[in-house]
Length: 109
Ligand SMILES: CC(C)(COP(=O)(O)OP(=O)(O)OC[C@H]1O[C@@H](n2cnc3c(N)ncnc32)[C@H](O)[C@@H]1OP(=O)(O)O)[C@@H](O)C(=O)NCCC(=O)NCCS
Image (cartoon, rainbow, N blue to C red; front, top):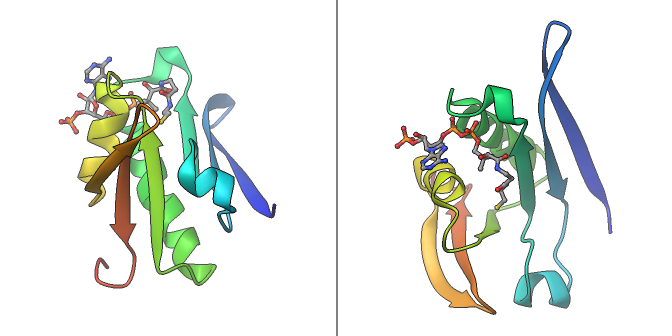
């Protein structure tokens, strides 16, 4: 499916990657993944990068015309859960062992 991959860098340093899946097929919606995935390389963690990367990613999603996005994470992934909540994630019922959150891109500007 169409997707966009962003590399986040600071000067010569690679900080991490964020991927936006432009649409969800049935599998992604029901299983794992959601619209957006990300990681920050270990030396750069706990400095707010993922929170800012997701915020920037949500702006890109708006330009793609998405009205709301699904994000998924493991229940024990406290860091990712916080990243999602900081960006307005609203919990939905967990599925297949994953926590699921929706971010409304129309209401939240
Ligand atoms: C999840 C991940 C992207 C977070 O990246 P990060 O740049 O460290 O995140 P931030 O610095 O923006 O921190 C976000 C919040 O999580 C908290 N946090 C970060 N690491 C944490 C940890 N190991 N345990 C608990 N909380 C943590 C931060 O304190 C911050 O909390 P706050 O908003 O209440 O201040 C990073 O840990 C990672 O790449 N993990 C492996 C891949 C992954 O899990 N990706 C997400 C899949 S859903």
